[in-house]
Image 1 (cartoon, rainbow, N blue to C red):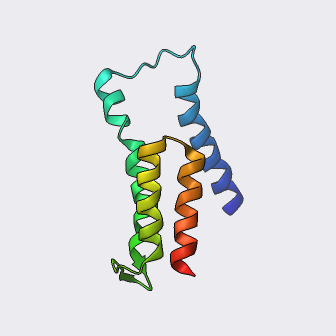
Image 2: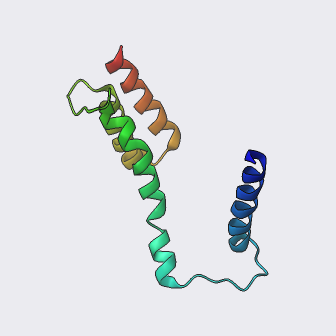
Image 3: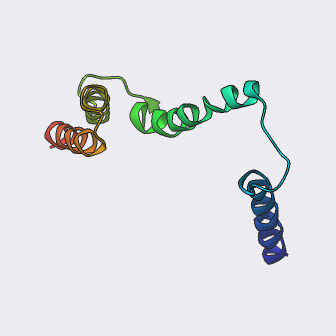
Length: 101
């Protein structure tokens, strides 16, 4: 039963993604939906990173000694100033390591 569920979900996932990737199918998104979907990337990234940054031991942690916050703040500034993925990751990791240890 579990294997059948996995196969069925894989088929559903493939089918929904194939509809948008196959160029010969007549599915076109309207401008409003395209504009709405432009917010999905930042929304998903925020949903993934917010618990990592702010929740520790099942409690909200916004203290000044939180190394995740310092690393994220420096990474945001580096991304804004340099527009380089390498500098962003490197500086964010460096600050995190310096504050954490």
